[in-house]
Length: 102
Image (cartoon, rainbow, N blue to C red; front, side, top):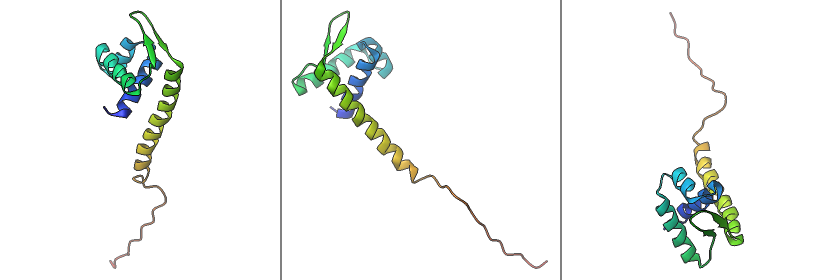
């Protein structure tokens, strides 16, 4: 699984406060968000977010993961934006046109 995608899911869940709201924000089903989150937790071997049918609780490790993932996601966004900075042309333009004899 794409790690950036996993980080986006954790960010959405923490910020939305529920799997349902996060799924809506990500245009995914609730079960898809839950499955991706479970797969990430299984891969890492830790619980990031404790969940029940009515609530969720971000664990201390989940909070650390969330904060670090924000930094990573922001860095990726800045990197992509920096690629487009070179495409912008700014400055003064001088044009010389020879006068023709009339």
